[in-house]
Length: 480
Image (cartoon, rainbow, N blue to C red; front, side, top):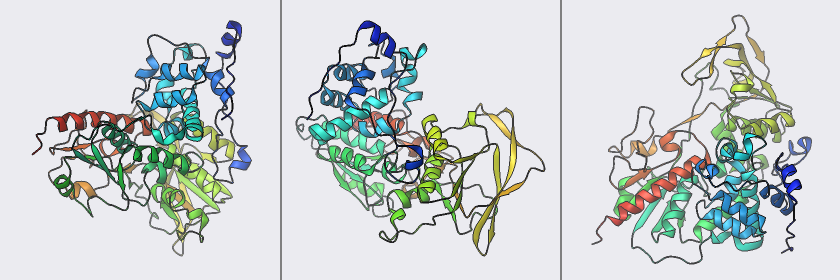
């Protein structure tokens, strides 16, 4: 381990560095557009120490209130300033068991960093970048599998089943294991991590990073069963026969489509299928891996969220000559993170804004183009965004051979259909109160299966609340 040299900044130097956040090193745009390696390279120790000295160490701690899992942000930054990077990672893990993930994919700009007092006059402190740095540092230098846990607690005698190994499930499992409960996680696919492994590309979140975080949770004594589809192999009622409580964090993975002509043509994918095949099943290495995917020469991705950006940038890395991002509103309404939009533009994604698909054109059963109309923005709708209105006579065709629909996901009906006494809402999501309790005694739920598609950290926050609620529920049970 290299010796850490702690810089001594003068008051004038600190005043100057507080004006701008430390830049994140990243791959050259042209080079990275053709490989699946991580785009952002990460802070050096010098970068982290510089950025930590930008923190004002506010007494009010608004940044903490902006974090759904209430990471002790000033405390971990203070440890960075002292050069105690491993201590900083462990401090984060007191509240968040997956900091290497959250440091990469959480929208800090709209959460903790949006509350940063420094951001009122200057750029806010780069909290996420420092979180990623210390998590990576601990993994390489200090044994990242510890998850901040020195020793396992005394067993409580209670057993909990966690359905889904995404961010909500991982937080529930870690929190309950630290309280002494025996936790078993059930994952439908062949690798733990849920949306973290099947939905987020390698160039944004490497699988090795997710695996390291999962290993840290397993080190707490958590068991993980893969290839286990709850609702098919086991019902919730069957799990309740073997466990004292069940948490459902299965996510919202049912693809949505526009219901326009041509969506059944060959070459049309949902973003869910497109990303799962390339991210988790390594379709980009076919035939070395036996998961084929159409590597389009010209690709249209419909949508404007983070998943749409991931799909467009994945298509580019699969070898597409041109990738079009088709979105019916303007750049100002684009819901994706600014960083992802910036990276996509740098890499050459062609943004077709104020454009709405009306038909997918085909020939001999295969996609040959996507017919679109141009839009203009009218009055605000119920979401507060200006409603897109069709410009009459503006139809035109973008010639493509592959279309990826990335307009959101819905609730997978497998668990609700096999659990008739579990209350769901009109959109098919599980109804749960703020603590995660559902209509079924002993069954709790959180994350996207309750709220619909949201962020990793919001799902983690729901997992934290549910874990507390499950623990309270278990403590009221009388063991036979």
